[in-house]
Length: 323
Figure: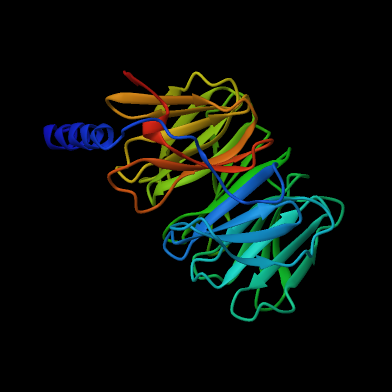
């Protein structure tokens, strides 16, 4: 890390604590269920779509008010949700084996996809919003053609449940993580398998792109791995860290591209920066946590829990320590 970056980070954390007067309780979003598995930011981080039992609620990031609610189409709890890059479509998959795609402009006649004999565990829209990648509990990866309303491709490279799927920011790659301890990396153009990433010793639970050249993964082996994708013929583990959490359920980078958060099945949250760490234990399993977008000077998290609902936490209200 260069001297300029270090000084910038020091000023950031000094400002954070200068404005913090006393610890606040986490903000709780008005969801019907206390068990939340997924959420997604959209419209440049101004809105938040939440999988609330069998419904989808849309909240304002600024006011936390409910802006809209997409009617119940699922017959069982929603497990995964995603929003298209053009902010027009929202997709959800549930325990009922259905995937639903809503057009937010029309709000009528959503597309319904029935997954035969399995459930969708993770969703990701392609960069051009033409396709939806559906990771399934039976290890299959389905590529759904939205315009033609049909499954375009079925990929069968995983031996266990797919836990997370993500298109890269430039739309050229598609990654899928699985309980078989691997990550499959595909060409988004032709769905050819480029390589299989092996570095985890147990289930890989979550993947996210830091940039078009960096992919982050975490899992049941307590590892957070940053993969260097700059040379697809020679992909390496750029950095491997043990977070101290027994089973890591999700991870996300802050806007500085250096600090990141990890969450655990036991309810622990840990933010690591080059200089400091922030910790909090919520006491309930955490499904997912992500930094609130466009917060350059202050760290805030939205956290989906299995027992406390959807909450929002500021880093300044967590336990602070020097690294």
